[in-house]
Length: 207
Image (cartoon, rainbow, N blue to C red; front, top):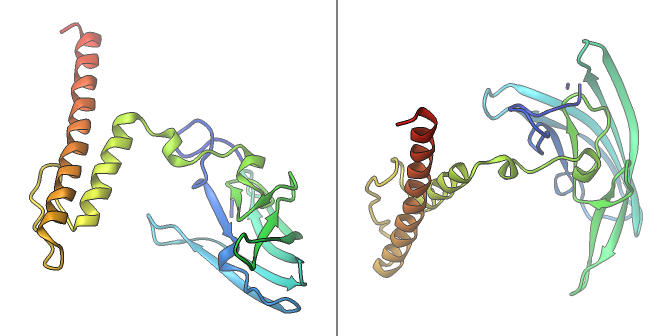
């Protein structure tokens, strides 16, 4: 796994520039239990393994500990072995039960996810590394386009903007029409951003 710095496209690194450790994939709410396992990450773009760790979990009634072991490759090619523990604690839920939390090893803050940015050595919270969410790096037109395709995907659309989306057999006609109107309104926002970009380009080129 492997120096910590900017993200793939410049600027502050995002939560996707590295590995994410989710508490929900590790813990079973069984106080007094101990177990071990491993986690493997796969790069969704290439299908290749991007990292793996071994872990041991120890739960008491209200607190616990998670031991992590893995190897990190630094920018200069040096391989660094990591073996450390992260403290866990619980909080009471409003309607009963409890919720488990990581305690960030760098800030002490509660978190349900910890991150290991490229080149970093220890998993820590998003705030500890100053990470931003990918959507915070998006331009307005990118964000608008992403919303359109998300809406189209939910309705079963597979084409581009303005392409026909047949009504799912199980969906009521009124619901289908309402969802189409939502898509059309979102597409109008995308085209408005495109026109704005075109006007900016014309001004830059003196046209």
